[in-house]
Image 1 (spheres, rainbow, N blue to C red):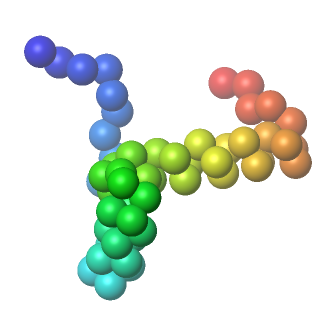
Image 2 (image 1 turned 180 degrees about the vertical axis):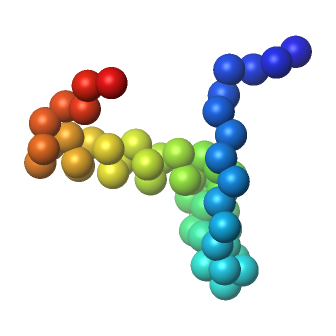
Length: 55
């Protein structure tokens, strides 16, 4: 069964990935869900400053 989620490969240093994994675990999330939350937060901040993004 194919899902509708997009995939993106991220190239990052192992040190940053390990620290990010620590934060995600601390927050009770997977690294993927933690990144998704960070992206959502950043989009909200951006749109507050610059207006709604219309795609």
